[in-house]
Image (tube, rainbow, N blue to C red; front, side, top):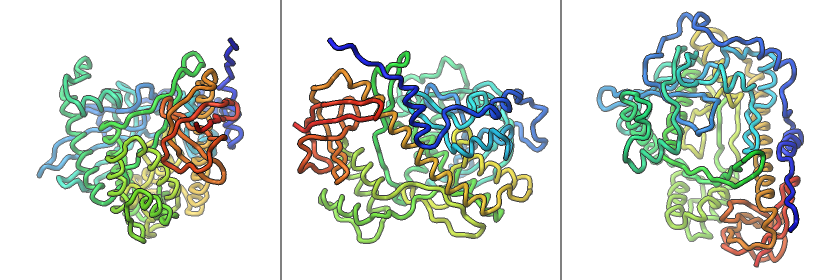
Length: 487
């Protein structure tokens, strides 16, 4: 039996980083700067910071997440309102504009999660240490308040500096399963009074907001994103993270928090960077895709009609819905960052069915969030904007490009890991779904394990959505190739 080859996935990841314009390691100047930083002390807190350490803050994230950006708290208000507080890690407190660490973070723009290795935007001493909202650690934060009304609409509130302390680090899958299926509360061992009631209230607020956005036509897209399972540097499998009420909870809370940040900046007549998804650039293609499934869409872009089409397809054929979602995403065009001048109208976010949206709730992971944090802190302090509009224009264009490059690194490494996983299964047959059929090639997603490869033999006549059987012909981890034959 031929001995299995174990490629160095870390080296392949480093090469992918360099190929797409990133540095796999931090410059010496950044390392020296971070080594000089000390653990945050209360005496360094802003004088106007509100002490909110006593309330029941919680975080919900992946089980292995260490760069915790946000924590949240809810309480009942009058007239069946739910009052929400979202605390965002004050990264700017330690990462000053123009410092070596800041310049490196600006250049990379984002943390890159390959599954094999994570390349953080900020050194782990910061992002997983003293700027992370770990449980039982006092931290500086920017708190965003808003109220969720009974009909799901949001009334924007105040934004201010605070001292906070996370009371519990919770996990998506655990919270989501409990909210969905009920049963015994999974965190009784933490012995935190009112924790279950707090999560119920947060979930109620999230459901209200999601239902309201659904009425406005938000797009319920569900693309498959597999992640490698690693054991001592070897790929042992690929997993797909299942969406749950806990994921939806955090998504709704952050959408409302980001819109509240935009509202504050608009009221202060500050320039800003917004996150947009323009009206679909290829609406005709979306119409054709719907027509192939015997559904008629209006000639002009209509978010509500598209949302209704997607919902019907998800119910009719859940197995192929992720591939339909991916097709729609490609036809719509990517999200991007744009600079918005004071009093300039927003382009809006077509997929989320919201206007006036930004990214400001993950400053440990995305640089645009640090920009927004600095702008909002300037508003709070009644200072001039820390960025000129032309600076924001250049940064928005650069960060849109780095995000695109980062996704290329992540997708390549998923393919490389999948090629390793399948290298001793040459000749086996798999059920698959055609995900792409164009001049550049025909591609199919194997159902189990969930990997995509190129059909290099007998590919003629295939259309997107066809369910087929394929044979694995070859894999090449260093190139991220998985070659298939249609049977």
